[in-house]
Length: 153
Image 1 (cartoon, rainbow, N blue to C red):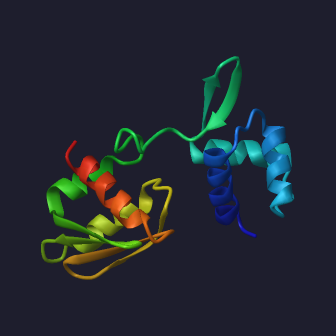
Image 2: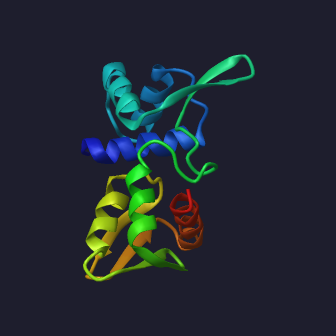
């Protein structure tokens, strides 16, 4: 199990669980088969850009809420590339197709690949078309709406 896979799992844990401490995260990771130390959990949290949020009298680790704002840190290049190159965003199940001008699909793909989207599995770029694959069958439309918001900023 590699670092990237573990960090994807940490991101999912942060989105689904109330994690009060790095020790809590270590326990959840061990349950999932990742034998890590507290120091590794700390590095993972930092690498993912996790934040601490207050929930009542408790402080929890969380991922920044990028879905409600349609963007945030790490999405600036996506916003620029969408505004500059994309002429249409079309969802279909767990896919999103972006149409660009000739020769621009790879530029948009690079920006999308570098951004911290939670549900993107991968991208495939042709000359003027970019295919984005998302994790589950219904999230293509959600991602398309998010991309529309990011591009409109």
